Image: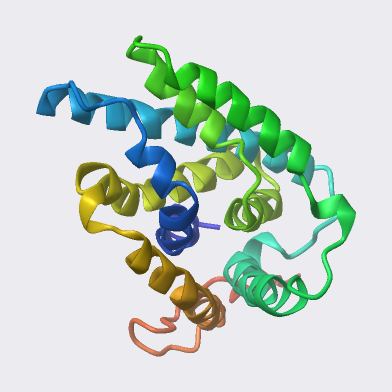
Length: 238
């Protein structure tokens, strides 16, 4: 497994997941207490917020990578792109087809969500600059479907370092859209967020298909280049 694969999977998931973030985390980002700050201070606060969120993502990724290293998931690393693409397709089917009709109780985290939101509410009242880092850290712990998908990829790496790294790239992928919301929130109204949410399953499905194709190494330039993974044969002859 190469760093390019880790970056590609993590960043793409974060980039597509940021569409979901605009709807879910956008109001929180716009509520960050930055109205009396200079432009330089606002950028500091925004970066601190994202640093906190990426930190919590990385910790979760390390834990899942550690747990995955103890599981007999043979061949998953070599086919991580295909595995994650398939999981993204299943995610679309579950969230946008099945969940609307039936949602198992063990996948509901209402108490955890309420607890974290209350903590974030109290931190928002703080005037300390470090509060932005803590808000981001707590935000990264909020239950979220796209984070679950990303954490599944961390689990599938079966590696502590790669598990943390893929979640860092996931966090970096979410930054552009949320920075746009933080800087120009007045231009990202509820109408835009609603349209983005409607297009989300199409984007996730498309990225899922793309990851599967890239993992198949079909030799198609840009779409499914031949990367050489899994082509080495074991031979008993020298």
